[in-house]
Length: 248
Image 1 (cartoon, rainbow, N blue to C red):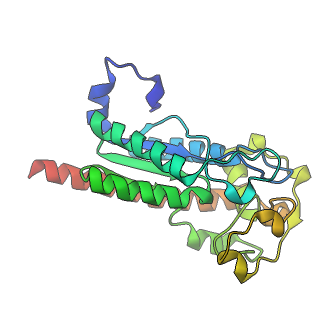
Image 2: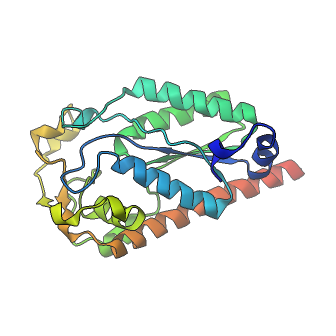
């Protein structure tokens, strides 16, 4: 259910019934010539809606800005600091706890947000231990990725506007993808990039980290469905633990 569509007279009872709020978190940044600046927002939001349907949860309004330091100098990118992101997420989590939610899912569409999400979850764990907080970034997708991927990763952690992310978009938001403009750009990223601040313009001029021409809707479906299964399982198990706790 869409949280912002509810009214204040009815929502309290529904919060008690559903107990879980999912916050899509994305970013506005360069994604090559074939994907829009809001790719991470679209992926997070559409994935969140599917997850909410499977877990009977609320979907909160998308948080559309993220920490994009690495790509901040590319045309169209909008960056916010980790500190600002942590404070915003913490305040949202605090509000959810006060409203009576038991589960807070931060569903991330942008890898650059990962540090802020983890720190937020730790702070909320300290201050609101009764609120179970998850930070999801495509969990449970490794096996599916290894099965469908045709090109090796350009980096151990990064994937961006490539075979993978473009496949996700073809499955979740195909109308925003222009495959006639998809390119292959597989940069060489050395070890030093993991050990010192390295703006991405030092190793790519396109913001594409792989061969986007190999992306397909079927690849996206296999990976996205695998991660939806993993996330659904975690949320349902958390809900069962909450029920058991209340019955004690």
